Length: 266
Ligand SMILES: C[S@@+](CC[C@H](N)C(=O)[O-])C[C@H]1O[C@@H](n2cnc3c(N)ncnc32)[C@H](O)[C@@H]1O
Image (cartoon, rainbow, N blue to C red):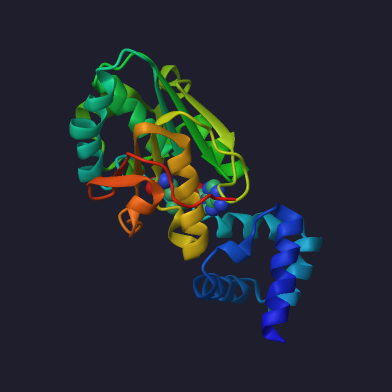
């Protein structure tokens, strides 16, 4: 009965906000939903389905809750150091424009970190795409306004160069740099992927997906990379059998495309 109720709930969520909960880890999702229901004083999945269908505010709360948006500039700074010192210089030699995609970009901290790094490396030609499933967080990302705690890893000299300090301890990422990023809404589980990319960042996103969904996403990302392109994943999202996806580990959390995926992602 409980399982049926959960499937009815998943169906309702798909209908209302287009998110496929069955592609997210079951136990983890149910535990989180339990916390959410407790917070709202809701007793079971069917009651929650009814509430989010009728109450717009509850639906918004639910969407925000689902799409955990935690992010910060230079998240896991040592990995961005590898990106800057070891990975990007291998691309910059070629004269053509770099194509980069930050997938699951949340509030923009990640793609803007890339802007800082590319500018600091003196890269002139780059196309920087950034996407997220969550429309509201993308609006915030476009504004580029951050609290100080998102910026704790930004070296002071770069803080002064790329941000304007406003009131209430808020920092504005300079508009001349925000416009370097093209933001768009994209669901990794159902939308079409871009092609011919040099670098993809997909960090702290698939952590919530089932193994099957995670493999599907990474396979599609491999297909999206050009040969020798690089996929940069999060600290808990290592790929166990990269070769099967046409990838080769170059540093922990960095995979270079050297072949083609053995499986076809649908
Ligand atoms: C924890 S944030 C990661 C932000 C950034 N990549 C980082 O590492 O700091 C996870 C983001 O993944 C997004 N997300 C969750 N499911 C997604 C999906 N199916 N397609 C695209 N984005 C998704 C969420 O909306 C959220 O903004």
